[in-house]
Image (cartoon, rainbow, N blue to C red; front, side, top):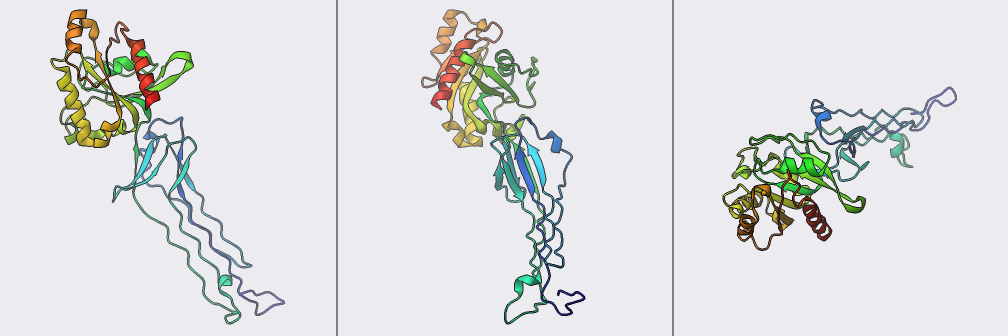
Length: 306
C-alpha cells in the first residue's frame, strides 16, 4: 500500500513483475555445424525482476540467443516432436519461453475491494530438454555406396576439399560444395557419407546421415562402372531410402555411372541397356572430366523442374 509522510493510508501500490528471459534460436548462414554448442549443455535464461512500489514494473529477464546454422531442427527430447525449424538467415524462434510476470495488487482494486492485499504470482520458469539436429540444406544430394566417387566428383566441380582415399567410409561427415554453372549461376551439392545395404537398420554408419537426404531437392545416385550389376545396386540404394522414409522416393532422381574412363564405347553401350528405363542416366569420369559439364546441365534442368 502507498505510504508517505502526507498519506498514511494510500491505495494499492504494487507493480507487476517482469517476464523471464526467452531462449531463442537464430539462423546464421555463416555457421555450418553445431560444434560451438557441443559443450554448452545447460542454457539458463535470467528470471524476471520483482515488481516494486509506486507501480514499478520489474525488469524482463535477458533473453539468450543461440545462433545455429540454417537447417537446424529443435526437437522435444521426450516426445520427439519438432518444436522449431530454422530455414532462413536471421530467423528467430522462441523454443523455451520465459515465465509470465505476476500482477501487482493494483490490478485487483475495485469499488468493492479498494485495498486488495493479494497479488498474482508469476509463472514458474520452464525446465526442459531440447535436441538440436542439423539437416543439410542442399540442391543436390549425392547418394551411393562407399567409394562410388562422390567425394571425388564434389572436389572436381566445386571448391570443397573432402577427404579422398581408396577405402570404405572415407567420408565420415557430410560435405557441402557450391557448384558454378553457366552465366554465373550456381547450386549447392552435398556429399552424403556412403550408404550400405542395411543402413536403415543401423549397419555401417546407419541412419546418422540418411536424414540429410531429406533436405535435398534432387538425388543424384552414383554407382561405379566397376559394379557387376548397376541396376541391382541402384535398387538396394532405393530400398534403403524407402525403409528409412518412403517420402524420399518422391524426390526427382538422376543416375551417374562413375569411373567410366575404364569403359570403351562398346561396353558402355552394353551397360546402358541394363539401366532402369525411367531414370535419366549419364556416364561420367571425374578423373578425365568426361561428361562433367553434361552432368551439370542435367542437374540444372532437374532443379528447374523440381
